[in-house]
Length: 190
Image (cartoon, rainbow, N blue to C red):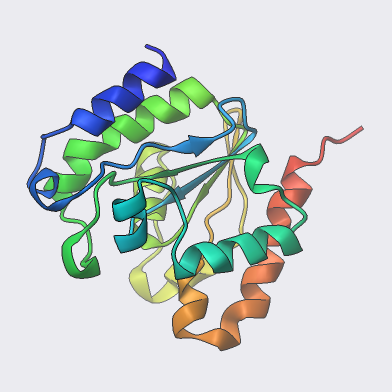
């Protein structure tokens, strides 16, 4: 399967209730040969309306974090665990993740990035389960942010979602530090 075929399939998807409330099922976007894949939870209202990744308030934060990490957004591939907006920004339900996650699995296979950066709890939980990484208890979950997990030929770096800064500005320096680790991982060793 080609990426274009997968994207057409995503746009037409009717596999769960979210297809009834969305405007756009959001395909991943960016460099199809990217070394770095950012995986968010689901599109927000702006993204659903415009059909583009990270264009709302959290997109502005992400752009700033990437800039501070010296990463060009064009050298990444961005996607979501769930391709449709979640009503009232609620958490995704397990059946919605199950209905949609095979799209993410196909994107990972087609793009074959060296680095997977899941953003936020649900994306991290899914990637940890996919690659059989033990998920810490919820009370200690924050300890995985910015740690690097080596699984086969992949480096997995779980990060806080940029939206976290919108709710708690005091954590911005921690996010900057953790996002800069992606630049280190992208730099080829001699």
